[in-house]
Amino acid sequence: MIIVHHLNNSRSQRILWLLEELEVPYQIKAYERTAEGLAPKELLAINPLGKSPVITDEDLTLAESGAIVEYLIGKYGNGKFQAPTSGPGYLDNLYYSHYAEGSLMPLLVQKIIFDMVPSKTPFLLRPIASMIFSNLTKMLLMPSFPKHFSMESIDKHLEKVQTGWFAGGEEPTSADFQMAFPLEAVVTVASEMATPAMVKYVERVQSRQVIHFLFHPFADLCLQIKFRPAYKRVR
Amino acid sequence: MIIVHHLNNSRSQRILWLLEELEVPYQIKAYERTAEGLAPKELLAINPLGKSPVITDEDLTLAESGAIVEYLIGKYGNGKFQAPTSGPGYLDNLYYSHYAEGSLMPLLVQKIIFDMVPSKTPFLLRPIASMIFSNLTKMLLMPSFPKHFSMESIDKHLEKVQTGWFAGGEEPTSADFQMAFPLEAVVTVASEMATPAMVKYVERVQSRQVIHFLFHPFADLCLQIKFRPAYKRVR
Image 1 (cartoon, rainbow over the protein chains, first blue to last red):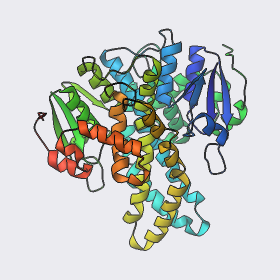
Image 2 (image 1 turned 90 degrees about the vertical axis):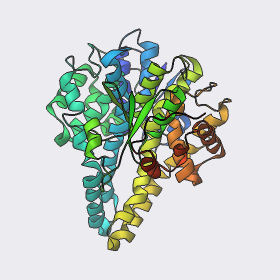
Image 3 (image 1 turned 180 degrees about the horizontal axis):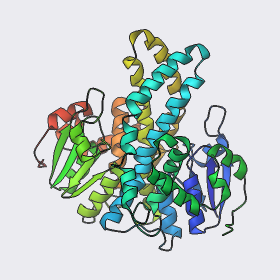
Image 4 (image 1 turned 135 degrees about the vertical axis):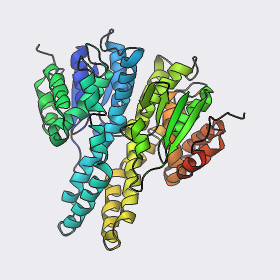
């Protein structure tokens, strides 16, 4: 039985979506971060890096979203969600399945940290911290955000692909399972950055994510699914 | 002709190493960051995200290290550097080829930024900035670094693989072309984090990187190779 070891405020959502699409039975085991926002020792026992998502499948333990997505599609896909092996669809899938975690997520995480730190700074230092971090955001992140979300990149690509999936096929591929999470995060948390094409994409993804808890903000998700038994889809 | 568009202080080194190993003719076009540390408009014209590495191969433009490595091995490898298609080697290659950019590099970049910011802060605010960022490093990064470099993860794996390559084969695979850069960075820039197994690994990689400039710190690399003509290996 596949177990998805889910840490609150982490990136397991994409794995849950994929498992639902694959209609493979699985269990979710949820873990709460410590007061310091770190992984609890129970999760460290599964993945010493304390990162999530991490799955166990019999005697295999595998972390890293991109690897998990490829592994699950390869082992349980029966040909479903396979990216083209050549042509533009192959390259688009290759690019976006690496871009999601290699470029886009680090940028989002950076922003979350910069936004969060001042509020965690001692009261008297907070104005200075706010100034430093708003400058950091302006200097380091803001020049990148519009580029990443400009008509030149994601948005332009989403406008281009007729089917609405990143590799241009009739069904999502690993690129979509990788990209859905950061795009959902942008549309939900940084909506001022979201473009119509992104909103449409997230709606398309969510219309397939019939499991109710996937719509909830991540912080809530964990509590709801804590030690939830294997989920059976109702559709 | 393949052109590697190389931005100084970026991650193209791994692509140069791979192209050397593939013995494919290529050109390096180097770009200097602006005073703000951003990509110059010449690079933005090639890759709107201003990220490097990005390659052009005839009419194809491809960014994202992980995607470029897979593409080059697939198109020019003639069976060389292929990862196993099943078994532990398959999973190790899958994991580390995503881990390098999905987890390890973001952590290193985070540290570089946290170390850099105070020095860029107005003189009078510098002591406060230093305090804030050393706390950030202590809270956010230090708990992760030892985990990532502990015997539990990279180090343990490097100890395990007899051949010294991440997928356990006789030749490097995409996992190595992805991992070599961050490990080289750690051994060079954050040597206090480096373990004997990592140092040995970087030495193994560098013993294959016979091109002299690959040994130089990245900041120098760019100037040396600026508009360098197609490189012909001397070994």
